[in-house]
Image 1 (cartoon, rainbow, N blue to C red):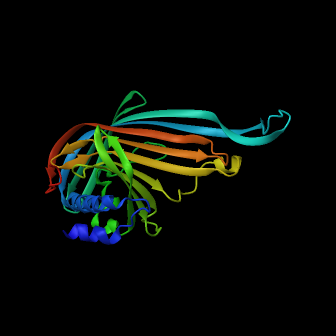
Image 2: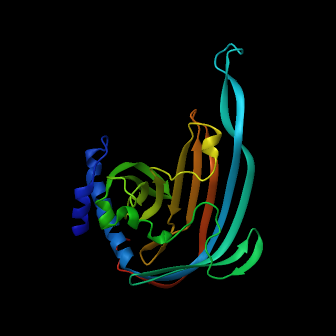
Image 3: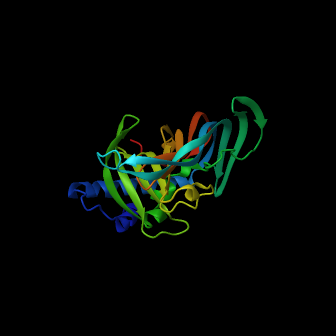
Length: 281
């Protein structure tokens, strides 16, 4: 199979990967690569409801003392963050995606904002930190033929997703570039190589736009986006949920969640799902 051959050339196995799992990784990359190529070529027209809940926290500096030994008089000053303000938002959209040939089009109509009815057509997402675009094509960026040549892969272990046994595959970019600075984790069904979950994490998150870094030193920023693909139609998996988290960690290892959002997709209506995907058994 041509896809499997291309994948084979790009695979780097983890040092502790048992020899008996290496053919399994080759098989996974071959089948998921074929799926992504067909996903790119399919005709698609569907809409669903997209329900978003987000929490944004603003912080201020907290200074205190902490004992460093059993002698309570032996203390040192430390800096940390504490929440100053929390903002919560919710949105409900009608979401439509149409793909025909090489043309892609997304459209959102806002139905509800923070519990109040809205009737706004063809709008941009109003989320405060992150957006979701063309999520159904999420697997392509890690597992298509082209991108399999840009990543090193390994099997991290196993897990259960939606009641199904999965292999957890890690993908590390061979070279950090403007178009390839994410590392990923992919949950692949052990039986048929269906892609059930993907996690994206930028290796060098862009500079923060708030003033957290100026409040205290040694803050590390981490962004994690996870997409779940629980719905299957005509051999294609569609997003059921996406979560986004922005986390700041102090030099002492304490985590502060700056932002978290949940995107839930439901009520799908399909007009066109035309593909030759044959991975499903």
